Length: 197
Image 1 (tube, rainbow, N blue to C red):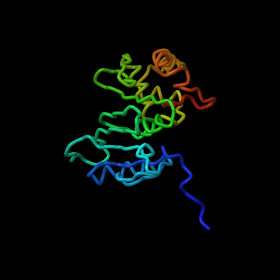
Image 2 (image 1 turned 90 degrees about the vertical axis):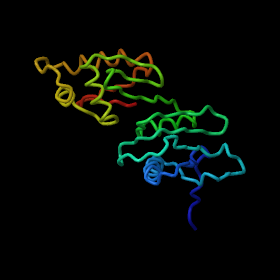
Image 3 (image 1 turned 45 degrees about the horizontal axis):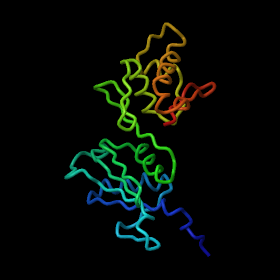
Image 4 (image 1 turned 90 degrees about the horizontal axis):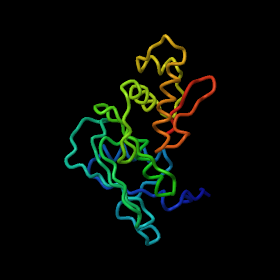
């Protein structure tokens, strides 16, 4: 007898509301990888619409090339406040927004290369050019340990000092701490650093 696969909490059921088949496919992969179940938008599990998280594509007539994520999403769950993700939407921010409906803390992070700033929700954290270069590299590899040498090379840091990457990571930690806490950039012994947001 097969095991009952419907053992997930109701908040793990997600309905995707979009006519864009490419977007639907991409979101389906993201959701399944994160352990969510996809349900039809008309579903009423247990006769309770609050048991489904609705993800609605709010970008009209998206015709851009694949993998550029040129869409905006509105995420709703029952009577909880809606969560709006402006384009471009990353996989990490999308999953973080969904997790917020299960009581997990959410920090939606965006980088603005023109202003050299990090946006946490609607708040801006201005950075110097070098700080932004380090943050951008860490952000592109978030969740992975990266060495001091990789950081220095990617951000074009002065290589005359052995601890140049450490100095910039320390500066970033101080700037990120008020909004994201002390465990944003974690030291990985023998490997370097990991951005964990």
